[in-house]
Length: 170
Image (cartoon, rainbow, N blue to C red; front, side, top):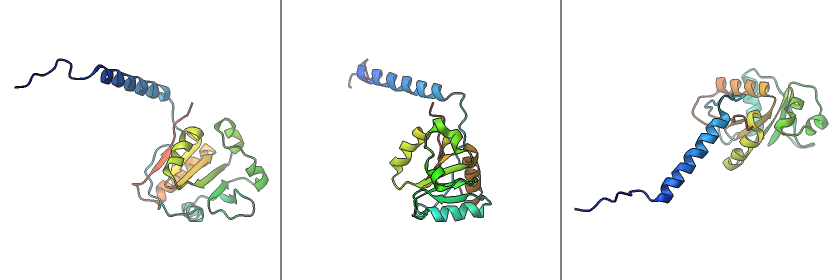
């Protein structure tokens, strides 16, 4: 019969567990009481879709957003502004993608197709509550437009894949 040690866990393990619990409490406390501007909704979007296919799908759901390529002279294949406004390319191109200037995005969102999932993980905290991820696409901009897109995509797809809206980064 073997003897059971009174110290079944090493001290460093207890200390490490305590640090993890403290970090979790701080993170949960930081977001307590904050409402994300968009909700997490499971949406199945094909990983091989491009921006024109996404725009077509959004339009079929009744959303009328004017697409403007984010690079002059190129099509809207990878990045695009989707807007309800009459802003021209030069004006849209001048919008800075930072939460601190979100009021300049009224009526407009930016959409890009990020192939690497790690890239999405970087954008969520940077863009905070003004970011929406759906399949391979990441949106930034007017929270009202993000909500319209989220709702339109929710209506027009079956649930099960990844759509994520980040919580306040502050």
